[in-house]
Length: 116
Image (cartoon, rainbow, N blue to C red):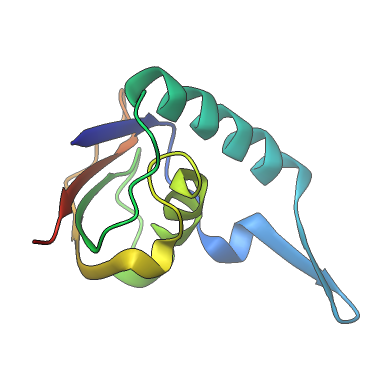
């Protein structure tokens, strides 16, 4: 199964804030997450998977800024929880690929396979 989420990928660091010991989702990130959920619901109509999973993630940014690979997919994967799978702890294999920039169509492409 393949799901494509439009918008420039957002990092976990930019999505969440912390006040004292309370962690919260920032307003812009909450709007993005709600949009991701709408996109997911349009692309996946089945029940959440409850099996072990592997994912292949391609990140397309709108620019060529230098980025670490490991901070850009967590927010989008959390958006899939309870819609495509029960919990992201089911993911046992993950590949993340930083693609060349796509200024006109920044996005995250997620391919999900069940592990037999």
